[in-house]
Length: 256
Length: 256
Image 1 (cartoon, each protein chain N blue to C red):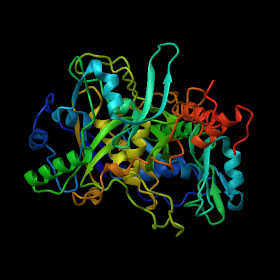
Image 2: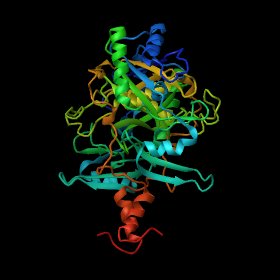
Image 3: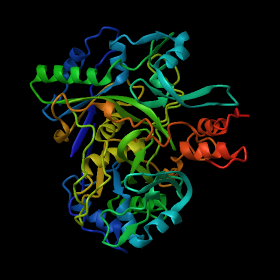
Image 4: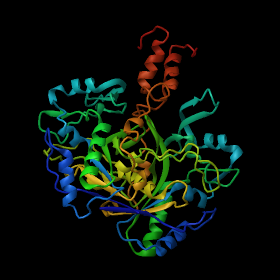
């Protein structure tokens, strides 16, 4: 049995806010409290706000460019003239607009992702462990689109004191055969669970999941930085049009 | 607050099994029972078994080919000689091996996906509604890899009486601006939640999630068939190597 709920009473987060204290206070006020094995899922947006990752909105395209390590694909909608850029950002995450966020921010500003989401998650986990004397984990979530599936799901971009993968390799199925390729990304699944109680527009950016204490461990467990899969082994390292253009150019001929 | 738990006591499912009765009996034995608004998440594998979707294992590659509408990408590991095929299957789902499953099946056999997962989900939802007199939804889940992220997450491949997307388009953020591109795929998030309580090797293939009754509706809601995004608008309709080869061939020259 797992349970998940959102914390009430977390006000708008501003630059320099002591997020560990704010989340801790919300936990202290909650009926459910906090226990060893709980996993606290924090919308990365409020971490960005506390870390003052605001940029002027008229620099949005510049901000995306600055966060981009590599353009994976871009496509301009012929109707609207708007260009969607799928990029790999400095954290290795492939997403639209490099995680630069223009919703739920003060007018005229956009928000970059936290500078180092794993470090922020570990810091928050450490602070909550110290304050409440319990072993808890922290995940930072972001809302990501997916190749080949419509809509978005919340996934993990930062992790502190939580196993991001449940390694079943070497385990066996009911017939005794090895589950050779199974590596559930439980950190992503927990962030998706948290989204079901946080919602997008309700001002409840922090949720707690209880019931999978087996996934909580030392603060120096590998972070969410271990989830992105990029580089030469990535079969989808460029979009169709971009890879096609590479092929065309390989014969010294420019795209038509 | 949401809660999720797996049902105990569901034995190995065989061809022709009355899955609605088996799941219903497990619910009837459970302490939590079932209530209107509950969402029952069923591992698609047991639906496949009940529907006798077994194929002889020496036909595995043939089975994958038969389920494949289109090869998206393939890559042979130079060390092992094994080829990974990412394909679009007849349901529009892009995944490795077209969903053909070789784990947790009787020796010598592999298992295809249910013939029509949305129809199966609607049938199960209808049967549970009739038996218990409550409005519940059913999702069929499968374990899917992702582009650009390691590991797998459980996602929805069938839906009966559950909204698969929570449509927030037109809603506003805390600053009153429209959440224009937000379309959470709640069906996928619920299947990920269920995976956290079902596990992969524990023989607990059915879970119930309680607390999001707002997502349960008529049995003729759009199914999970509305989730896959394929066709010309898909920026990743082929892998890098395949798209590159298309570009190379575009001038009448075969790939080197």
